[in-house]
Amino acid sequence: MSGGDYERWWTGMPITPFLAGRTFEEEQITVMSAAFADTCKALGLDADHALMPLVAQHVVGLGQRGVKTRAVLYLLTLEEFKPYRQIARRRRAANG
Image 1 (cartoon, rainbow, N blue to C red):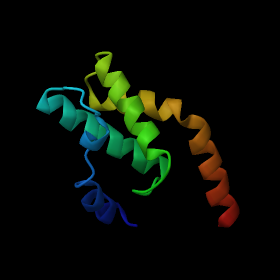
Image 2 (image 1 turned 120 degrees about the vertical axis):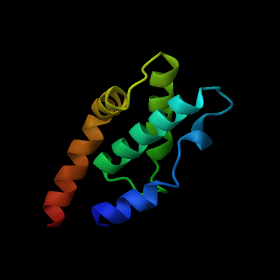
Image 3 (image 1 turned 180 degrees about the horizontal axis):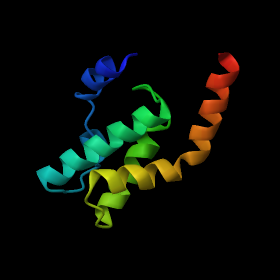
Image 4 (image 1 turned 45 degrees about the horizontal axis):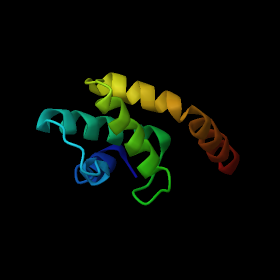
């Protein structure tokens, strides 16, 4: 999937299905959705990947604790899933 295709694909993937009744301001939901999409893209996750709910829960949890910027949400979440990212890189390298 090319970069442009990926961006179009993610425009319809907000974090709202993972909020489980928690209330956030609309702007914060937009920021969390962007951080969620950024993280999933960096991890190479498809829309039906089993890690997606865990990534979303982590982003939402950070949002509940007051993290409000896209970059910080992204970086903290990416750090949390660093082991998966390293495994995924090794698999991609092995598969050519």
